[in-house]
Image (cartoon, rainbow, N blue to C red; front, side):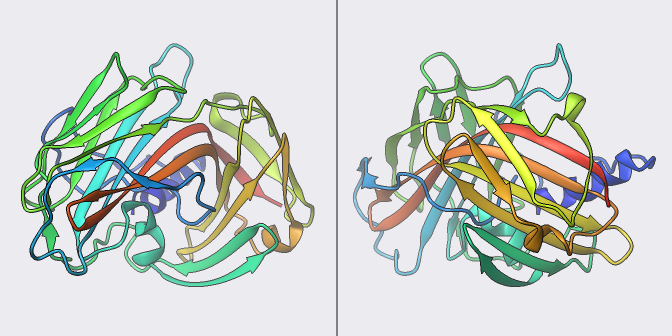
Length: 303
């Protein structure tokens, strides 16, 4: 639920109210809910591989997911952050939390998908226990920085947020020591960060946009698909519209047919690149995802 919770908090702050507190974990044992990411979008470069230990005799229906997300600094002079989120069990990937834990209807529009959702509890709900398992200590290494994450016994998940970014374009080594879910290790490329040239969002504030017109986007240094997500939040009705698109090339356009029903209170724009890969931990498939975020901007109003 991280995307929804932060969207509400950021928009409340942008509109003059104080942001809700967000508690982040250190670089080892983590507390609280898993830090999910963007929902939807097209998969980029998924392939099976890696090395894993012997199979799990009770692996039927089990799966796992590990997401490494690098986020840019929010203000000049500050460090960016790296988030590690993971869980293993009879459950969905960590990056699908936002849509799984809300009541949503969906439809496709060109290269975009539109989700209209209703949040009934302020974005703080967690789904019921999902037969979660331990995979032992997780270790992520980009060749110069190592991040570890241990299972939180309270949530049954892994969640770490630390200051400092893993290196853009680096080959990440991902390893789980093994437990109920067998040991596995693999590598995954962290995409290079793109440079967003439109819209202009100084200090993460993008101003306003006209929902009756297409929303034009542009960037440079994109060596593959670019994922874009626009989240419109109505603080009054607690309704959320999530538009997720994937673009190739140096530009992208979110059509007015998608933006015209955006709430007036404001919106969050996220632009990033990602890579996906699947590794087998014995008989348990584990989806790996590396995300390099380029922009997390706020539209303070929608006309």
